[in-house]
Image (cartoon, rainbow, N blue to C red; front, side):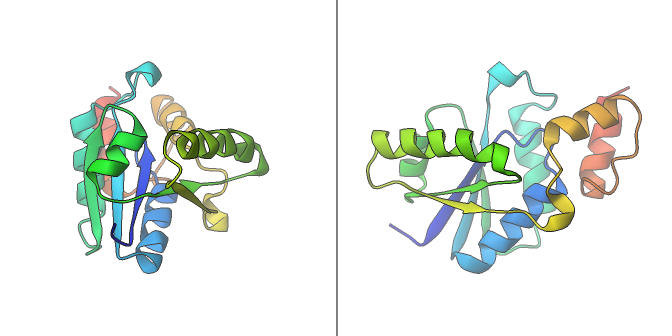
Length: 159
């Protein structure tokens, strides 16, 4: 296994908070694999291919980042990417219970799996993709919450 960490999520849309965690994980691990979940149950605004493309573009300047899409169990994705370490972000105490359940389930499915939690920079602690989508849908300014490329993609997606 490599010293790679896998950062799974829906990333609908990718935010500055996501990018912050990717950059910081990139300083701690040899490789960050951003694994974009199809997650049809959440009815994403962007298709899987669009989300993968957006993250590839906004992380293009970070040498040790790779982006993949997946639509099966996270455990299977970890195995395909030859790692056993999951990155999850914790914005607030309220995130912990759900993330703890996920980490426990993943470890139950594969005892070799470890989950590493990072907190976002203080300026991103309130930020979530669903809030960004809501603000953008109501024609609010999201330019401080997402990279310019994502802001433009949201403007095109939301007539």
